[in-house]
Length: 326
Ligand code: 5GP
Ligand code: MN
Image 1 (cartoon, rainbow, N blue to C red):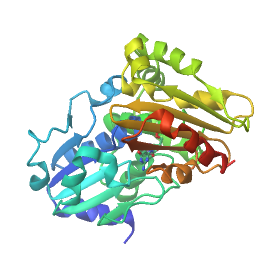
Image 2 (image 1 turned 180 degrees about the vertical axis):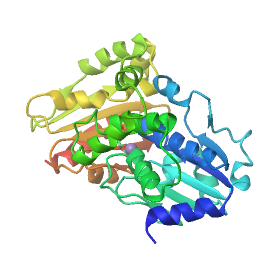
Image 3 (image 1 turned 90 degrees about the vertical axis):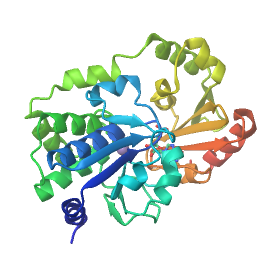
């Protein structure tokens, strides 16, 4: 039985589901999660959607009905016992759900992963997806079409469109295939408005984000090879600009807009550590680089979180490690 049919069988045979996605969710994380929620709801299933992080403000429009709850151990202590099936979307390492990780690891029901990243952790009863997909939302599309489980209506199409558009860099990254455009054509037939969705995601930021971008850009430095550019965001710069963590999404890409730069790195100071984002061009596998530092991701976009360290203590080490991949 293929992955999609196995997933359908599990849905047919169970009634209560818990969905979650990764820390700092992006539009593909939320879009795949909410599209899956809508499928299960159409089938009359009991579904809860609980994430470690709050939904970033520019993506709140995707969750109009406020279905997604931010995980709070005091309120949500029973969610793990009450579900028969726990599905993680757009991640494949249980550590990416942070405070919900323990609940996942000790979960007694069926554990499912729907994802398009490399090297899935071997903790799932069913894995659905592969790195061939541009987005987890594209996997959900494939699941619906393959099984005919529901019709793709306006609400589902909106979620899938937002996920695919953002994970393909607005239809310009490598996996932007003819087939992706055929899928998009079908989603647009439902009446969703691409101008409006783009505008909501990318043109409704608070001014603090743009101010922070200015600060971040002013820190850009180029390494000795001339092929790596990096920037640093400190807690102070975040405060000065009046921005929040979710505002940083996308900044690292500016490193790659400089001539001759093939690898970009963003260091972001956390309360208790450092978040690092890596971006690359061509075949430079930043997911391998990230995995040396407790992270992972895709060939051209990856990240890590290191705890108990400061940016200055690790910056040079990370840059030297990155130079080996050029
Ligand atoms: P970003 O730099 O935008 O936060 O993340 C880029 C990609 O890297 C994400 O799509 C995700 O796949 C991966 N990623 C980011 N942070 C982590 C992390 O801490 N651990 C792992 N395994 N992957 C990460
Ligand atoms: Mn994704």
